[in-house]
Amino acid sequence: MARQLYTLSFLHLATLLFVLRTISAVRFPPGPTTTNDLDFIRTSCNATLYPDVCFTSLAGYASAVQYNPARLARLAVGVSISRAKYTTAYLSKLSRTVASPAVHDCVSNVGDAMEQMRGSLRQLREMNHRRPGAPTFRFQMSNVQTWMSAALTDAETCNDGITEEMEEGETKTAVCERVADVKRFTSNALAIVNTYANSGA
Image (cartoon, rainbow, N blue to C red; front, side, top):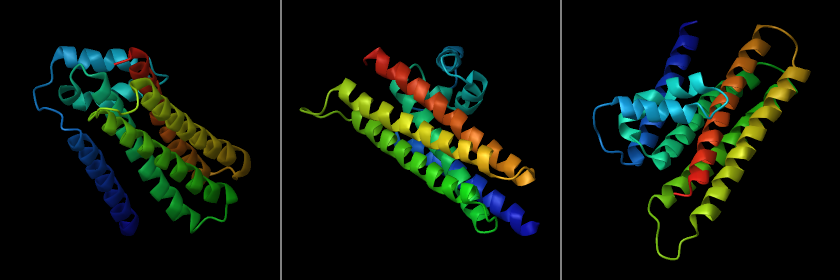
């Protein structure tokens, strides 16, 4: 039991450090949170399928995002990566103790989703430092949208496999909750990315 608590604490800490590193890498200016900053987050999240999850996960960074769609897109993708990373670690550990092909497949699915999202974040960061002769905004955003869509498909594939193949029980419930979490965050990030792409900024 103590070992499980230690592992969970380590995973939570690793997730927090990853998100903070992701945010700091964008070089957001510091400042107090204002009502306008929060309203921007809330309005942006209203365009997602899971607005409450979106707002809760992003509102804490409102002062850093301010009224900037590019920053919000990078943040949303970065937070989604952290959720996928946490779930991949959980599934990987579970696959060593549970003889379920669906769990093993999920390790690969969610791992692939995480890599797709990392590719998206890299592209979004490069757009923040546009160089003469660099690809156009729409071309770059098309890449980001394609990778994020693929990441969502990977998460859905994992979820379908668990739902159809894994035996009912507490383990299945726990896996489904974590995978659904990845789906929600990825779906929200994709919606925010789409809004940014449509803005033509």
